[in-house]
Structure formats: C-alpha cells, structure tokens
Image (cartoon, rainbow over all chains, first blue to last red; front, side, top):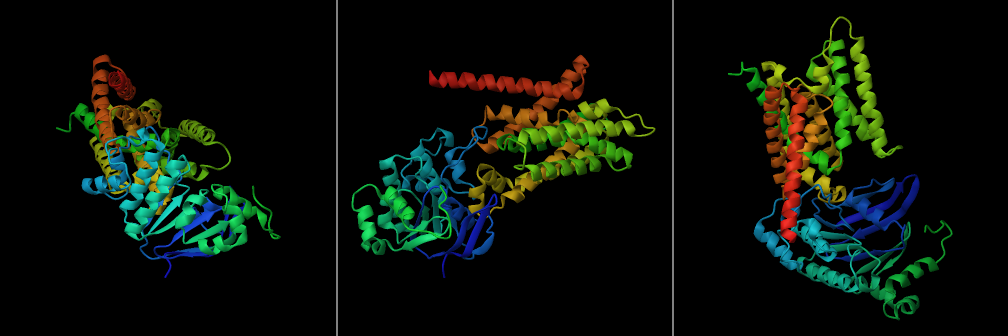
Amino acid sequence: MSLIATDHLAVRLGGREVLHHIDLSIHAGEIVTIVGPNGSGKSTLLRAILGVVAPSKGRVTRQAGLRIGYVPQKLHIDPSMPMPVTRFLSLPERQTKARIAEVLARVGVPGVAAQDMTTLSGGQFQRVLLARALLSRPDILILDEATAGLDQPGTAAFYRLIEDVRRELGCAVLSVSHDLHVVMSASDRVICLNGHICCAGAPHVVRAAPEYRALFGHGTGGALALYQHDHDHDHEDHAHAG
Amino acid sequence: MLDDFLLRALLAGLMVALAAGPLGCFVVWRRMAYFGDATAHAAILGVALALGFALNLYLGIMLVALAMAMTVAALAGRGWAMDTTLGVLAHSALACGLVAVSYLPGVRVDLTSYLFGDILAVSRADLGVIALGAGAVLALLAWRWRPLLTATLSEDLAHAAGIDPARERLVLTVALAIVVAVSLKIVGALLIAAMLIIPAAAARNLARGPEAMALGAIALGGLSVWGGLQLSLAQDTPSGPSIVVVAAGLFLATTLARVALQKRSTR
C-alpha cells in the first residue's frame, strides 16, 4: 500500500495544462526527489498532492489517516501578527514545552524558542519549519525547495539533517529540488518532471547510464546537469515550457 | 439596574468590544481592513431593506452584510485589483443604502444614528441581541481558533494539516456579518471598521503572541468604549465618534510606547 499515489493526474492553472499524465506512488520510508526546470510543475505537483489545487483529470489518493509534515519553500508571516517560535510550533496542535524544546534541539536551533519568527535567520527559519513538520510525527515529509534561501553549506547541512531525521523516524521524504547533487545520494528514486514525468528511476540505475556519468562525473554541476539532460531528449507531443 | 441607559450603553459597548477584538485581529492579520469597511457600509442598505419590508433590523443588516461579504470573497482575485473591487463595492453599497432609505415612505429615518451610532439609545431588547451576537462570534472564534490561525499563516500549511482554508474564511465572513449587525447601534456604519482595526492595531504594539494580541484588543476596545462614553457625557460629543477618538488615542499611546521600548533596548 503506498502512502500517496496519483493516477493519470492532470492539473490546469489559468487555462494552461501544467501537469498531465502523472502516475506516481510513494511508499513508506522512501526518499523520492522531483527535479525539473522552472515552470515544469514541480510545486504544482506538490500542491496537488497536498490538496491545495484540484486535479483537472485523474486523482490523488492518500492513505487514510496519513500524517503529512510539510515544509514550504518560504513562509511569509505578516508583521502585524506576533508569532513566537513556541506558539508557531503549537499550530495547529498544542505541543508541550518539553516536546518543543526536544524538537528544536533535534533540528539544531535549541535557543530560539522565545524569539519571534520574524527575527530568525533564513537557516534558522527553515529549521523551525522542519521542526514544525516533525512535531506531527509524519508518515511523510514533503519539502518544497526547502533550501531555496540557503547558501551551499547551509543547504548541505539541511539535507544531512533531513537524512538523519528520516533514519530516526523512518518516514518517507518527498522533496522538490534543484540541488540534485546534494539530495541524490540519499534518494531512492529521482523523478524528472517537465509537465509530465520525463524519466524516473533509482539513482544507481541512473548513475550507471552513460549520460549520467557524462553529466555528473564532473563534481558540482548536478542540478545544472540534470537540467540539461531534461532538455536533451525530444518531445514530439509538447513544447518545452520555459 | 438595566434601566439605567448609561449602564446599558456601557454593557452594549463592552460586548461589542469583546467580539470585535479577536475578530479585528484576523482582519488586521489577513489585511482585510477594506473588506471590513465594505461589509460595514453595506449595513445601511440592510437598514433600508429591514425598514422597507418590515423585517427585524438586525436580521436585515446581517443578511445584507453577509451577502456583501460573500460577494467580496467571490470576487477576490478576479479581474480588478482587490482594493478597486472593494472600493467600488463599499461605496456603492453605502450610496445605494442612502438612496434606498430616502425612498422609505412615511417614516422619518434618523440617518445620523445609523451612520454614526446611537449607543445611548440601546434598549433592553437591543442588549439581548447584542449579547447573543457577540456570544456567537466569540464561541465561533474560540472553536476555530487554531485552524483559523493556521489558515491565516499559510493556506498550504493548513491544507497539509487537513484544514480547509475556505471553510475558515467562511467562519470569518459570518463572524464579520454578525459583528457589523450588532455594532451598528454602537458606533454606526461608518465607524464599525474602526472598532475592528484600531484596538487590534493598538494591541499589536504591546503583544508578543496572537492570543495576547486578541486579549489586548478586547481590553483596549473596552477601554475605548468606557472612555468614549465619559468623553461623550462630559463634552456632549457624539458617542460613536468619541469611542473611536479614544481608541485612536490608545493606538497613538501604544505606538509611542513601543517606539520608546525599542529605543531603550537598542541603546
């Protein structure tokens, strides 16, 4: 039984079909990474899985009682709303002080409990968002470019943390990322998205492919490399969206 | 004891402050200030309809306010920029209401009392309706507090937690319509939005958490009602505007206090 499955999912936004023919399923404990160029529908796919946008065709099935820990790309908190970290972590469910202290320590920001959310640095903010996602004891963590605002070392540290946390909790991880070279090593499966699923597979399968060596053999260009790979193969049925 | 019109006025005002405080916080957090204005201005149209069709006044106002709030919610994000949509709707509703009132045959409608409130004319029956309305709004907000806060922070986070943001918006819309209906006698259609926004904004200056801000808005709203009534009695000024003047004074005071505190902490 998969945690989340999509069946011939299509999503239209503003009259444009952003996603079509998406069939994917995520199983317990799996790490799945979605990569693709801007406008490829990565975030839309996550939003469809979360139930924020309704499918125009097909459907999304979630396991009954599935607990989702969602870490958004960014979160704007209106300055008119005072929001200490402790209070933020108690939304929507009340949490004990001890549990909040424990989870903040786990994500590496033990000292921020009393601070207002708006005073946190980018890295601290993302860790607090992760802490909040962990508090629901999720079956699956969903990360939408959760490291978008972080520098390279910050990104690497953040993904190491995700891997550690996943080992402890045994939850599945579905992430959307450009930082393929960081995420790739831990992913069970990589899904390359460009309106539809261009290609997908276990990293070692992909790694064995000559294209992959050509693309990833040279160190840091991971994200860029797969980006190119995505544009390499031909699509007769649709034009590439920028 | 409730025979004393001053006591009735104070009680009515305090009850409105009790409901408007926390609701006003959501209006501020969600940047719905104009939304509140549009709904409140529609109240005059409600008065005209209620008088014209011999409906209960509160019911008429609530129905029109609800219709207005729903219209605004439905139009949000379509076509015009939101402030333009709200500007069109708010002023059209007010103008239509004023024109409609002038058509009412026979009755001489005291427009001033609907536009600016007439808290000293609150009857025991009014008091009952206001208590019912304010109680309903408080209960509604207390019941949905956490989902409301979550949906206000981020609709995506709400969805991920199994909360439907559209339902929470509806809760606020209904609460707003009720508050508009019960506040009309207290501060009047033109100043209802002030009772929502000013105490909440003043409380923001002092509060460190959302609950503290809601409680602060209640306290400052209550203080404004009490102070406004005193001012009105002492100076023979109109009661509704006097309440709002006191609220504005409190906003100014808390803002200065915040600035002073920040200066001290950075020094």
